[in-house]
Length: 103
Image (tube, rainbow, N blue to C red; front, side, top):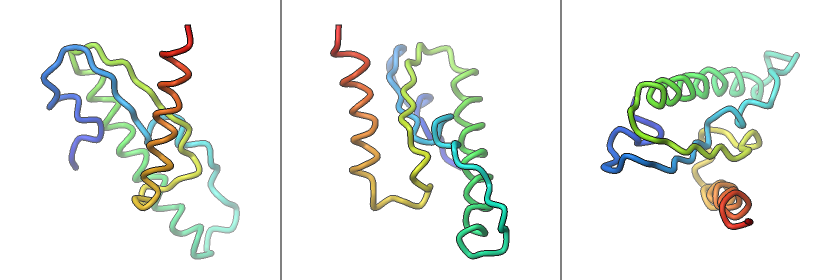
């Protein structure tokens, strides 16, 4: 798998990273009805998110760079929602508006 955050490829020592598959993407619980089509997709979705989350976490912990991490609430999106990139991007930009421009 490729690196989700791209922190190792960055040439700066201080980075602002946005992780749309971080802790805020796991609020959904697994459904009780495991054999419906949507639930089967959900069963594959959660392990994929965990894999990417653990990979990103390990890369941050093993980096010597100063990383400021933003994690927008993306639990309503799936890893295959590429067509919703504008909505997801807006979530990250919204964190910038709240976190850095309000003194």
